[in-house]
Length: 175
Image 1 (spheres, rainbow, N blue to C red):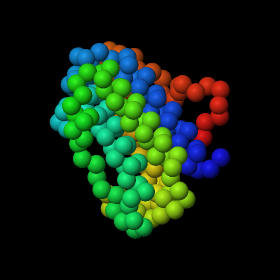
Image 2 (cartoon, rainbow, N blue to C red):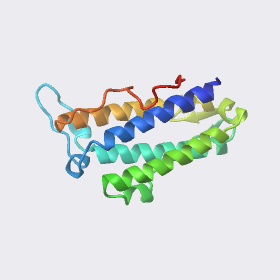
Image 3 (tube, rainbow, N blue to C red):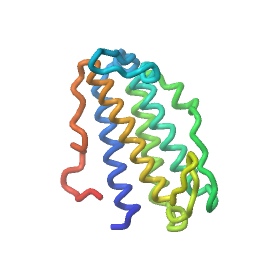
Image 4 (cartoon, rainbow, N blue to C red):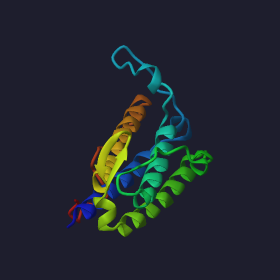
């Protein structure tokens, strides 16, 4: 199994697991604002983050970065993703999940089409140097970081989130 195949295997399970999280919440939890307590102060920035905002951010950035990876020239800069009006326009959880599932399927196809030169080329993102493959692993880390925030926001709203890494795939060896 190549490194790209390992990445695709693990990233796919992580995104599918995110859909499992999102299917557990209702519309009020989707937009629920985090609450502070003495034991868990989240500061001013996190109080503006909702599950909806985090999920939209994941769907937008993953689609943007994976679609642009083959287009970035050697030693070029991967741009920061901007808000996607098509993602921002989706207002309900079921509609959002359907859109994100379609985006993820597109990402699967794009990842399968990557060439050795795409994953081996050097590039710059946020002032740091990566190979294309290193950048993809950073995309997965980015996803895990925000999934952890979604988990926390769910628990603050008295929802027991799924156990992390209890992914859908049980038969096949992952990664």
